[in-house]
Image 1 (cartoon, rainbow, N blue to C red):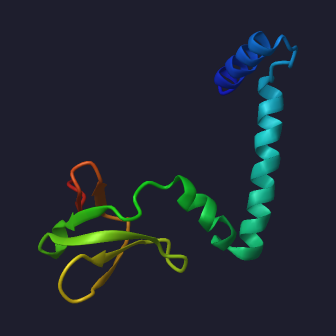
Image 2 (cartoon, helix red, strand yellow):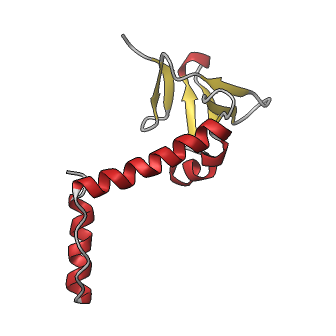
Image 3 (cartoon, rainbow, N blue to C red):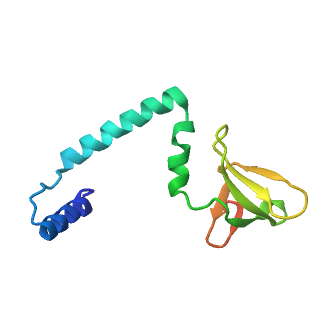
Length: 122
């Protein structure tokens, strides 16, 4: 149940502060979630991804990460971000002439643990 950890935090807060903040029911959590999703959906329809970009990057871990591109002779690249036009991963060569790679997710495997991006194995 998605409210378990939130209610645990509320209970912990209540104990520490001698308060009586009520727990959140599943129905209340769902209503809050759906209301926020509706707001985000309307923003997305009006303005695309741009209003969400800074929030997205606030929690995204890969900007600046160096990886090797298996399909490009293991070229070493630095992850720059996500293209607002295509939604693809954008990477730039680390050394040599500046080459920008627009990496489409379909058919690629992004293994950031081993620092390798390549074709998915079937």
